[in-house]
Length: 70
Image 1: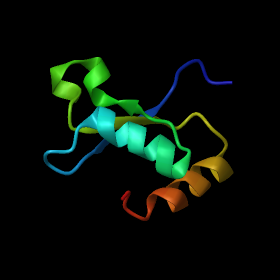
Image 2 (image 1 turned 180 degrees about the horizontal axis):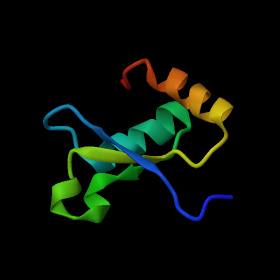
Image 3 (image 1 turned 135 degrees about the vertical axis):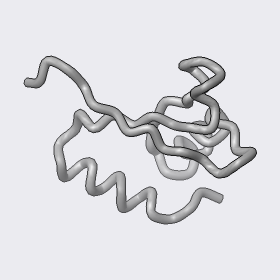
Image 4 (image 1 turned 45 degrees about the horizontal axis):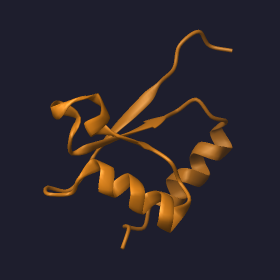
């Protein structure tokens, strides 16, 4: 196993709260991410995804995220 982790910081549309987006993603898609606001004011407007999962799982998540949330 790797001794470190990798993350993707995804930007959100203007005016969308990172915390609200994460809550909607959990409710609508069953996916968990970290709101950028948890890392301070500069993190607001972003969500963080880990890439420490099997490639097939990451492909499934990418497919789920292709459609915008409601």
